[in-house]
Amino acid sequence: MLKNKIKVLDFIGAIIILLSLYLVTINPVFWLLYSIGCLIWIYLMYNKKLYSGLVMNAVASTICIVNYIRSLV
Image (cartoon, rainbow, N blue to C red; front, side):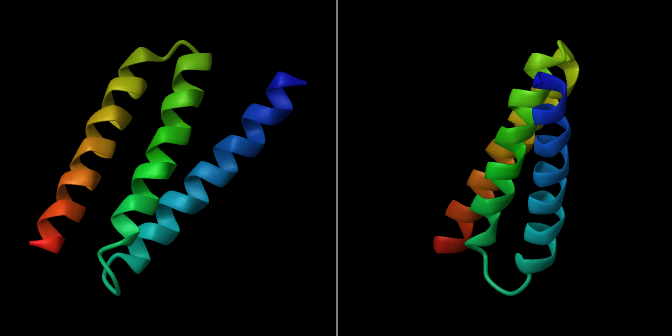
């Protein structure tokens, strides 16, 4: 049951990340959507015990938030 949930979250996370990368050129608020996609992947990497992917997505999520804050200033 958990494997099916992870496969669905893989797909959802990937779609969110790709869609937000396209939409960020329209409106910088989509950096936050990208960050949510990264948070989904953090959860997945933790469950799969792939800690390097977890760190990579944590850094990407932080970069997204910083980019959004920079767009406000």
